[in-house]
Amino acid sequence: MNAQDSHFDRYGTRLASNAVVTGAAATTETVAAPGLGKKIRVLAWLLSPEGASVMTWKSAATAKTGAMLGATGAQNRADFNPVGWFDCAENEALNLTVGTAAANGIVSYAIVEIGA
Image (cartoon, rainbow, N blue to C red; front, side, top):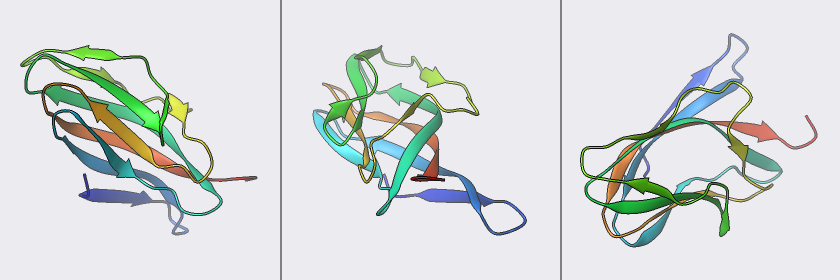
């Protein structure tokens, strides 16, 4: 889950980043980490499981979504939301827990400065 692309405004401020999701079956994997004094705001995602599975977005170990069911060929998605679908806690990584089948996709997120 390392491939990332960033988008900046004309002043060099990063507005959003994208991370490719390649979650192996029966694992919790880190998708992105915010850095000290920052948090992650999830703006959109698209996941496609390779079989029947359950997927959950987490802030470190805390669930931020319910268990999202997936099936072969189906897509689980949240369209772009400019205010974000959820925020991770300060200094906590965005993780994806995947059940019995691997899941692939992409997530768009913003790094938010705490107190900004």
